[in-house]
Image 1 (cartoon, rainbow, N blue to C red):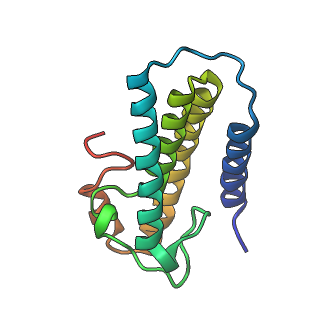
Image 2: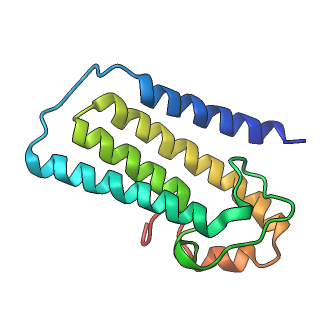
Length: 149
């Protein structure tokens, strides 16, 4: 049985994903060629990071903050540098698409996703520290979402 907090975090995430997909473009800003290219590059990088991260974590993957009972702590690949690369990839993909589209609504929802992922990852890390004996040490030499941030 999942904890209420787990369900609330995933529900909030799904609501924000849904809003991102259907939010009307209320305020648009002009996007020159360079900014459009940067947005596409950022978005594409985010999708690649998501796919690589999912492949690397495989059986330990869950949308919920609580760890999978038969899971294994992954500390190699992208996880050797950042603790939550899937969240990082989602942030990059959402921000990049919002920029290349010149859509303030999508950028605002991306900011809400960053806030949600920050609190979700804090809660998740408490669960991971209780589940994996070496998580605290792993946490001490990796970044949350992006290297050097």
